[in-house]
Image 1 (cartoon, one colour):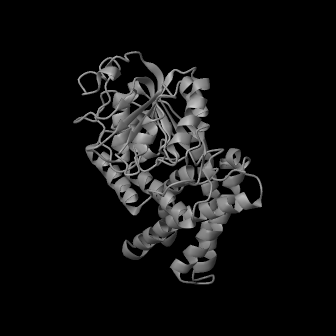
Image 2 (cartoon, rainbow, N blue to C red):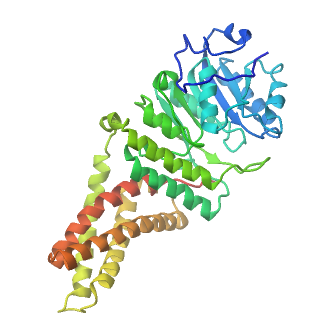
Image 3 (tube, rainbow, N blue to C red):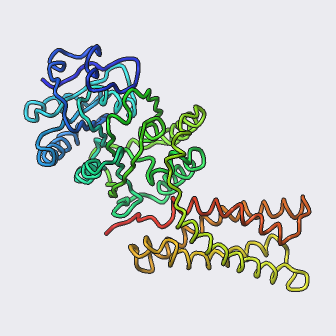
Amino acid sequence: MNTLLSTPAGSLAVSPLSSNLEGRGYHRSVLEQEQTVHLSLVVPTYNESENVEHLVRTLCALLDDATSGDYELIIVDDDSPDETWRVAQDLTAEFPQLRVMRREHERGLSTAVIRGWQAARGQILGVIDGDLQHPPETLLKLLEAIDKGADLVVASRHVEDGGVSNWSFTRRILSRGAQLLGLMILPNVVGRVTDPMSGYFLVRRRAIVDRELSPMGYKILIEVLGRGDIRHVAEVGYVFQERLEGESKVTWKQYVDYILHLLKLRSRGRISKLRQRLRFPAGRFLRFGVVGLSGVVVDMAMLFLLSDPSMLGWALTRSKILAAETAIVNNFFWNDLWTFGDVARRQRGWTPRLKRFLKFNLVCLMGLILNVLLLNLFFNVLGINRYAANLLAIAIVTVWNFWINLKLSWRVTEVK
């Protein structure tokens, strides 16, 4: 029987294949299965008895064909009151690649994933949700990217062919806000992927072997990026589906845990080596800078027209806001046509263009708030000439606008 009724205790490090099953308290029948497999896919579950059979049948049908049976599917259940583990266990006779782990003394999605990886025999380790919100068919694209040499391949909602099916406005804001916080706290980790909160990805075992993982909450990807030896990252678009059966487990606590996890990684300083591996998009930044210069001309001209005593003589703050918004419209037009034209051409039509403009405007509005604060500091407090103060504030905010727009704007978030 391919069932594990106990789990490893202590360290959350993933061992090499040669020793990952020894000395961990597993049943003799498990230790006898020494041969490695190409893929070990872990499905963490809690109260998913209504979904687990359909998920197992779908995944096994796909992987039987894609890997010629060279895989294992590991259900890791946190002792669900609806006995999800028992429903999965009853399927093991029909699906020999299926293994079931029932955790009776440990809880949490992230640790469930790691415990599954510790029991796994695969060269490639993966995770997919058990609620059918991650389309199983995307696995084929993930495997293809791994076979092409990626160390980590992430299913993303924010690249081409990605999106969400029916999210509320509030949930969209929370998701984007979480990503923005990640970029501010851990830019060299979160900035490597467009969807750092994704729970659907594959990673090479060698990239995380013997790395002590210490996740918090429901998101394991940040931990893998922050502590793993990840050189080549790939992304595949997918559309996040609405739950068909069972209840959603999204809570405010998940967002709090996510922020605490970012701060925990940041404080330990274990990600400095990633800085040398990041590729700065110099060409796109140069185009963004040229467009920004045209915006400076527009901004300065409007500020002179509106605030100079010899012209309209309006208050500085009001003049600056109007001047900046005019420059934002100018910058969006040229960035959409030139800087990010390759992305914009895949999102044709007035509705996508309007959405891009609103996102661009929102990002720039945050930059504008910073710009106004800096301008008033330089002019009213430090006594710098109003135009020199404005130019200095623009230079500082330009870096902010480029980085955030690069990561959050001009993304494909809806598909037909």
